[in-house]
Image (cartoon, rainbow, N blue to C red; front, side, top):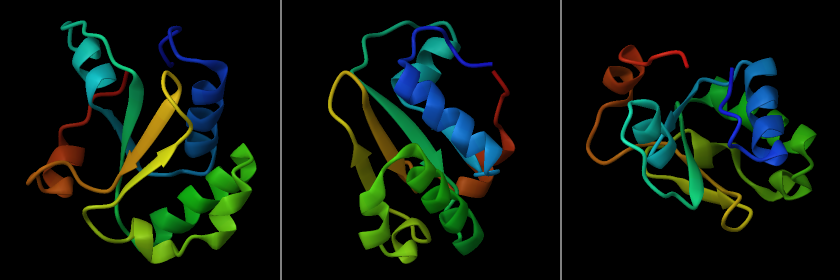
Length: 115
């Protein structure tokens, strides 16, 4: 179940990520709001688990979403830590991240909460 405050485009992308079994977490301002600390945010941050299988699934999802330029991207972009890839523009901007600060992704994913 996704928050009703998200645009249809964001909801469509999230549905595709789920359908294609992409391992991801919502992070940033929307995650903070989920925990009861509302704040203004102009983008939607998704932490993508960086590995080859997940990168393939992500790229397939982006292609199905209508982001044809994904064909120009190298899968390795989403296999390494430190990638920030932005889709769209505020207020419907989506940031795809492969790491968050110095946190270990395995540790972060082990504490996920289904919303």
